[in-house]
Image (cartoon, rainbow, N blue to C red; front, side):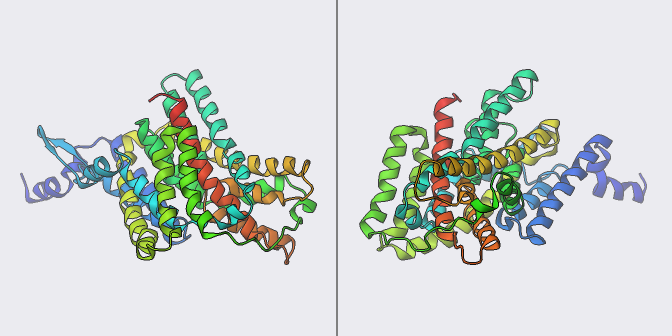
Length: 391
């Protein structure tokens, strides 16, 4: 063997032993990872998740990557990302811990000042169940694609809630987890692009000009403290499997509102949430290995994800329009779009649209109320799906 041959064998042996198809798949996954990193850095689209997901996609698709568990010469070598996946995602631990941080970030005051806004959050979950049904139909007509459990996991993309999507997808152990998470987080980042045309499509200029009160009544501290406890109990009775999701979310909010755990609240909002987000983002890349990710089903899932986001938005707006038919005090139907659980992006989008129509129309408080209501509704919807469809 010549020196050149030895050099090639040492540094490029892994590539030499790969087929041309495998090399193309590897390069495609590197490109996908690079695109996610680009969107995170250049376009500032969900950088805390798309950046680690993109870099992780590159890591796990390097030939014989030491980042994932693999068998070499009959010996199993554990990879750190696989170990993290088993320790934090396979048992749903990371998503639940992240919910504590999310709960600590949320101010339910706007929702408590106008409780009917929770109805908009519920209405905006329409896209979840429509997408579930559509995925199930595809699986029925094209055997070998989506099982009912896969359809349930795909439908939850419409929750616009990454941790809930991870929780449900992992619960059903779907092989499409990577595609589901890429779709969920990518479309969450694209909310400012997706929602405005959907809202304009189903509203008139007159409806978009509807003004709403700019002030909200103050909420007693006792109400703020009781709210997360009551929601947890009610959600547990309605959808027992949602208790883990709702309970951790509301526990985080209770830490925020109790007034005696300020240091813990700040830790949950910043250090805890950021740390878990890093681990979560890079660890889910384990499910983005080329053999599982590059398929027609992935493209279909991306399409279904867009379908879910569009119908969530339209469903919330239409519900607001219907409600206006029966109420004296009209609501601006645009706030219905905030029922999608992309907090706080969706409320900011609607507030900005309101100002574009009328410089004195401040919708932020109402939009935020609907947005946090959507956060609760999406988690409960995830629990309902777990109750309705067997593992």
